[in-house]
Length: 94
Image (tube, rainbow, N blue to C red; front, side, top):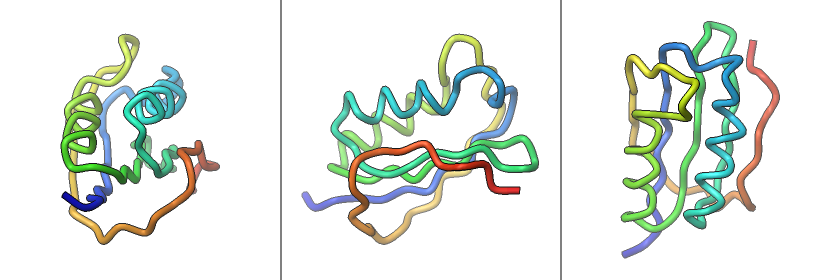
């Protein structure tokens, strides 16, 4: 199976709770590529790319997030892979 890409918008108590750092750690553990950033409206946006099974595992993790977070909703969108290098935390998009 080729690479899959998902853009995920996470709503709830997801800023100020180490959500981006925990996301990077989990994505790196799964061997995924992409990025995560805070949005000015209080959500977190993540771009997840890699093997299908691992992408779906990461999306399932994002439904829970780290222990300090409270995820209320997830908006998952299929995207075309862009082959980013590694997994990074990006600056907040205002």
